[in-house]
Length: 132
Image 1 (cartoon, rainbow, N blue to C red):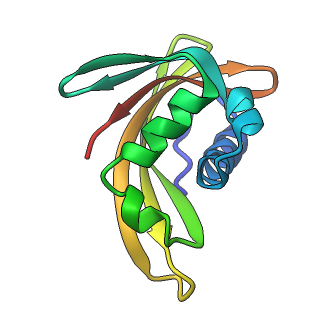
Image 2 (image 1 turned 45 degrees about the horizontal axis):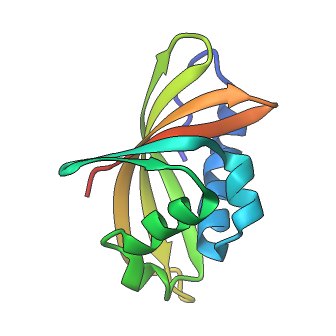
Image 3 (image 1 turned 90 degrees about the horizontal axis):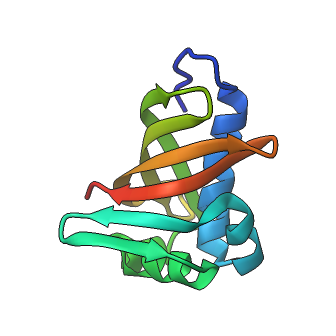
């Protein structure tokens, strides 16, 4: 994953995004709670929705356009496309998620923007904005 320069910890961000992909893929409710600052907000083309619980986050994950193909994936690789620091504690990041099969071939992909808050030694998702 690219590591744009900035005052944030690039390794921690890369690790967080890779971990987020694993957690959502595994549908681990407890781990989702640790990675989202709930309630979070989903902002889409047709409106906004409050993500009040880990179940809401997983429901969102299951409803995304790439979800049917993503279930077949054995790996999820995040690619950091863009990053904007918004004050000392917030980052807007655009991520391209690549879903890979057992031969490492891409079977699906999607892009999403996240507003992340630095906290507790890592990051937390505050806002999710799907782009695809």
